[in-house]
Image (cartoon, rainbow, N blue to C red; front, side, top):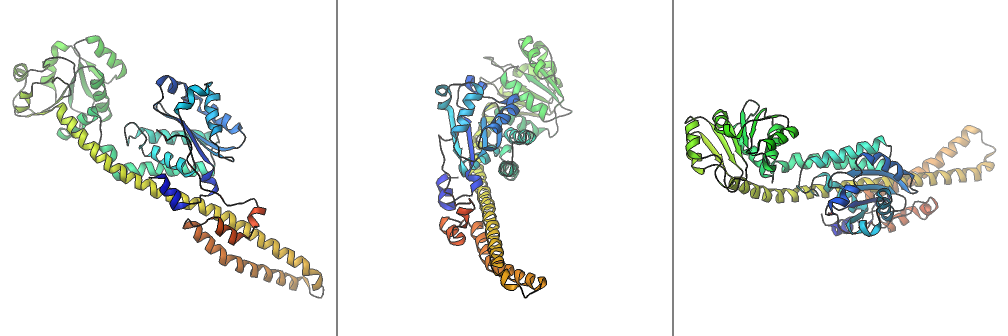
Length: 450
C-alpha cells in the first residue's frame, strides 16, 4: 500500500487511530544491540512502566529475536515518548540507539502492524511464526491489562488478516528454504513419512535443518551419520529423535532406507555408483536428495530403476520459481491489507460519528429541558399529565429534527467524507463546547520500518 494513497483517499482519520504510535528497533541493528532491546521475559514489567507514563492509554509490545516494537495509544501522539522509553528501560544512550529506531503513527502504524502479522516484514516473507508471536504479544498485554478498545480492535483484526492472508494465498506453500523444499520433494515420492527409514549423511547446518523439517512432517525413523562421530552426537543432543550410526556403515543403512539425504562438505562423492549398486536391489523404491556442492551422490545413480534423485539444482530451481510466485502473492496480500485498512478507517470514523451523535442528542435534550423550564411557569393552568405531554412533544420535535441529520452524518462517516467543514455544518460549534473537535490526518514520522 502506498501511504500517500490512503492519506489522499481517506483524508481525515478518527481520533483513536490518530492517537496510535509505533516505535521499533530495526532488524538491521547489530545483534549486540538487538540482544539488549529484547523485552522477552521483561515484557510484563515494561508494560507496567508504560502504563505509568502520563498520556499512555493503551500499549502492546511485540518482541521477537528479530523485532522489538511498542504499539501505544497516547493522548498526545508524539513518538518521542516511546523512543525515550526504549533508551530508559534498557539503559542505552541516544547516540547508540537512535540510528536504528523507526517510528510511525496513525494509519501508517496500523498498516505496519498488518504487514507484520501477514509476514510481509519478515526476513522470510510470509513465514508463520510471526503471527503466533503477534497473538502472544496481544495475549500478554491483555493479561497485564494494558490494552483497550483500539489496541484490542487492531490486534484482533491483524491476527484475523494474517490468518486469511496465508490461507487464501497459500504463500507459505512456496518456500524459499532449500532444506524445506528438499522435504517437500521427498513428500512427493512418499506421502507419509512416519513409517519410512530415513538416512541423513552430514551433521552440518543443512543436515540439521532438513532433520528438523522431517520431524515436523512426522518422520520417526531418522538415522544420521557423520565422518566426525562426535558432531553427530552433538546434533542428537539438539534433536533427540535421531539415531546416530557409524559413518563406516553408511551403505548398510542406505540399503535399509526409503530416503537418503546427503549434505556434506566432502570434495568427492560420499555415495558412489559401484558401492550403491552393490547394496541396492534394482527396482526397490528409494528417494535420494543431494544438497551438497560439490555433489555428494554420483548422478548416474539417478538412472537406476526405482531411484528418484533430486540435486541442489532442482531445489534451487524450485526456490526461484517460488520467489516469483511469492512476489505475485505479496501484491494480493497488500490488496487485502488495503481492504482491512479501509474497514478500520470506516470503523474509526463511525466511532467518531457516534460520539458526535451522542453529543448532538445531549445538546437537543438540553435545549428541550431549557425551553420547557422557560415556559413551565406559564402552564400553571395545566395539570402534570398535560405538562408531561407538552414536554414529550418538545422532545419528539427535537428528536425528529436531529435524527434526519444524524442519518446523514453516519453515512458520511462510513464513506470517509467526515471532514472539518462537515463537522462544522452539523455541529455549529457544539463540539468545541463538548471538547470534541475535528482532527487533522496522521502523518508518518521517523524512518521507514525495516
